[in-house]
Length: 449
Image (cartoon, rainbow, N blue to C red):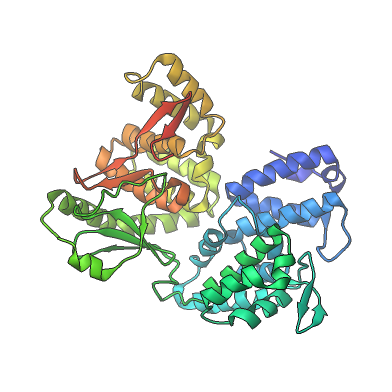
């Protein structure tokens, strides 16, 4: 880890040292924590690079990383700072495979009271319409050459597709036929598409099913359990007359709710489904206790991931079940849980030992040793995080399979798409269960990988 206090501008501009900085920046963009914000602000203050000024190649690379770090760490910035970022630097952060654009924005929006959220979203939209960042290429509007900057690209886009309630056919025609857009390199096309879609998404009111940013749980009359996430119904446990809900390819099944289909489907009596429904309802009834403790912990620790991890370690030693769940949820929501094994050598060693004991009857010792060694190269894999959670919840706190998997369902949702299949409701048994992990090619992998 780079020592920010003793690193000078001159040191940052040494090519070999810059590689170390960029490598660390990459890690903090993928696994967001307080350090993401600290590194961005340190680089900006120390280098004093201005996007509108002349930059050499190395300075340009630093400027791009500052933008990516700031975007990934939006949760640490004030509303005014986020607006300023949208107006002055967001274009540099687009097109990245290291984070999901809307996940980051929604992560910041849910920190705002829902009654105030739409006003903030509109300010962000207006900030985008003022953005003067350069888009490589040329732009002609009404037979006039205009500066190829973000705000003018919005003008061109709106001329063709409208400003509200975008016609998807017109949008598709714009992307396929518009001369200005077709001339752009693919990377710039991708970034503009992201920006246009972000603008549209920010225009959907938060108090509508399509626009709500918070996760909400619903159970229909047939016993199907859903979470409403970002305008999508994500299936948690399914009525038995449908296909089993077990996630495939590491993702929860996402469906569109068609009421006519729901009503025509035979309901039947399903004891396993009734059990799943009751278990999930009972678990959600305890949610407020956990939420209250989360608020207290965030206040006590100032949201610092390392302090939350210390609270988690202490709570697991003292068998404080509710506190463990609260800490896990905070870390999952921050994006810090994915780095827990790489950040804490003691946890890594404990999970390795847990894996060796758990799989001793299924695999040869050398296969298990190879798998635990390989875990060092990808400690944030779904299988690795699954074993960490099972070690804490089942081994340390002695939760049974069902109760620990119920927590796993919620943690997986908070961590994002890659982890949504950590656990699921099994409609055949009426129990919540963990997705199975197994050893393949000397690595521990999830059945959903």
